[in-house]
Each structure stands twice: as structure tokens, then as C-alpha cells.
Length: 109
Ligand SMILES: NC(=O)c1ccc[n+]([C@@H]2O[C@H](COP(=O)([O-])OP(=O)(O)OC[C@H]3O[C@@H](n4cnc5c(N)ncnc54)[C@H](OP(=O)(O)O)[C@@H]3O)[C@@H](O)[C@H]2O)c1
Image 1 (cartoon, rainbow, N blue to C red):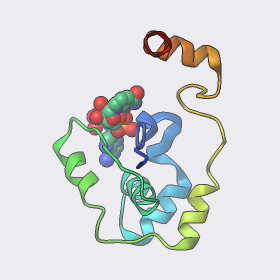
Image 2 (tube, helix red, strand yellow; image 1 turned 60 degrees about the horizontal axis):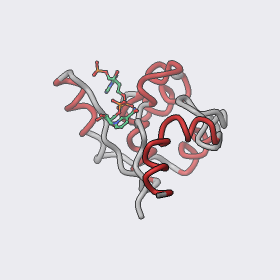
Image 3 (cartoon, rainbow, N blue to C red; image 1 turned 90 degrees about the horizontal axis):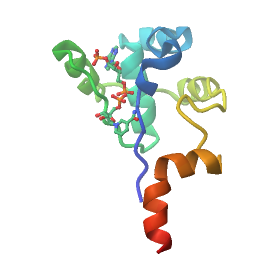
């Protein structure tokens, strides 16, 4: 089984494209926050399907295979984890029921 990012840029939430830690890391490699994010996911073996309606961003998003984040970079990015989902709580049974309720009912039959 391979893990895929739900939304590799967290749908742009929480100022992810202007995050100063990601910016500082990106500057070392002449890469954008988005490229640092994709690299961080890829180096952890996570599948990414970033979405953009802009040609320039699509090109930017695929241009992530000519640099490698260091262990120190990886640690700094991991340190940004607030341990709070940007979307919903996957551990809350009520939320799971709301989202997957009809599928779960079919499985229970
Ligand atoms: N999030 C979900 O709930 C969900 C669920 C199932 C499937 N998916 C699929 O997963 C894929 C990705 O998810 P997503 O679109 O929700 O979120 P995402 O890829 O995390 O974020 C997309 C957002 O990032 C912006 N963006 C993309 N590249 C950028 C860049 N280089 N610089 C600055 N902004 C950039 C996009 O704006 P612009 O388009 O304006 O560039 C858009 O607002 C999509 O194909 C989606 O269909 C998502």
C-alpha cells in the first residue's frame, strides 16, 4: 500500500505558499515554497497529485527532480506540524459517519 497526499499543498491553506521556514529552505536551492513542499513529500515516498489551473505553476510543480532536501531541511519541515488537520478529524467517528456513512452502510449489509 502506498500513501498519497490528500491535497499536497493543503489546498493552499494556512499561508503555506508564504511560509517563512519553507521560503528560507527554498532560497538555498532557488526553489519556491510549492517545490519544497512537493520535494518533502516525494522524499518521504508519498504520491503527489498537485493541482493548478496555471501553466507556469504546473511547470513549476513538475520541476522538483533536480534538487534534494537535506536531513536538516526535512527535520525543520517536520517541525512545522501542528498536529491538527487542515480538513477534518479522521479520528472522529461522527465525521467519518458523515463522509463515509452510505458506503459504511453498504459494507455492513
Ligand atoms: N482536497 C480534496 O479534498 C481532494 C479530494 C480528492 C481528490 N483531490 C484531488 O487531489 C488533487 C490536489 O488537491 P487540491 O487541488 O484539493 O489541493 P492542492 O493541490 O493541495 O492545492 C491546490 C491549490 O494550490 C494552488 N497551487 C498549485 N500549485 C501552486 C504553486 N506552484 N504556487 C502557488 N499556488 C499553487 C492552486 O491554485 P491554482 O489552481 O490557481 O494555481 C490551488 O489553489 C486534485 O487533483 C484534486 O482533484 C483532492
